[in-house]
Image (cartoon, rainbow, N blue to C red; front, side, top):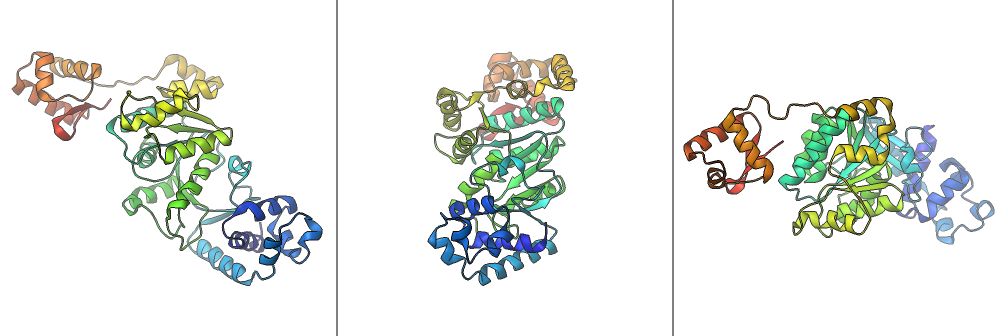
Length: 375
């Protein structure tokens, strides 16, 4: 794709604002931004239904082109890609969507058109239950499917945990931003974003000097949904951005899945509602997801699925440690006094044993003196 075509395509996003209602159909009809600019003085002859507003906007495009030239130079200088709708590297799944962005700005090395792409989304106030679900799901998924691209929104909570677990398990992961590549929100996620650029990437439709305004997050959500084969909601309140992404995924005919939660849990209410209303399929494991997606038809995956996930969850546990693990397996998150009652072990012995379990990474001490089983 020529630089002139890229400049003209970026310029189109500056005409008529960010609204795609006028420019995207025109782009699809004429096949390129170059063709639009070449016919800008006789658009009605080429497209009889072209709006007068767009015709007027196309009369003076000098400022839009100037801004586009600056944007292209910035991205070239900083090693970013400008992916136009007709670019072969543009996400093909997203290209099919009726409101696909004309241009995406991308910094990273992951192939956005991998065979298997999923998004994992949910609340910004992810609980320990949600973190455990994400960790187990990605660990197990990687055992079955070593090549999956994980997409999310780099936000607090479910998003950042999905990105982190993807990196920890050898997956490439892409964060879709609600602002330009010259900035990062939230700032505390800068370190993991830098890791993602080396093992995945950062993707946005927004140009430089664009703030992370509230409305941009909804626009961002459609890219998360559109680039993926399936949407997985981990935790969500009754209302939230995760449910918006799930709804967009449904409109794009993507598969939507949700992990159920305990009745009455605030951050499981959204997931439970999705499942109850048949807006998402219930999954409790990576195996559930793989079977539902039909990915188990792969010969290698079938063999692994038949064998099951082979891993030693708690190696080298003493009898006291195993007793405590058994108790936490039945009902997780207990205080010392509860464990003393259930195991009939003296408190000094429980305390020493819990310390050993923490050192082995089997349990974690939460707020309020609650011990949480990690695996």
